[in-house]
Image 1 (spheres, rainbow, N blue to C red):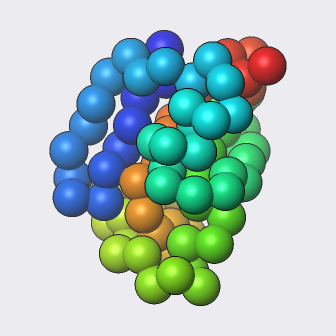
Image 2 (image 1 turned 90 degrees about the vertical axis):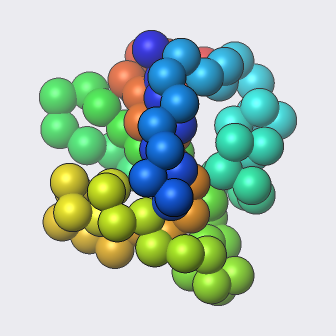
Length: 80
């Protein structure tokens, strides 16, 4: 199941990502997919860096790349 990894460090399990609107609401803007190994992916705010969103430290450390804002972590197969 998809989970929301908030930039505050809070983790919200089992978030609904059944529509584009729901994913946009969760990341607070337009979305961009970041594909990871083994069928995993992140859904991030496409304009997060431009909008100076706070760094998401837990995701940045986990994936060794600077990620900002709230992030959805899920399997590729979960996104229609």
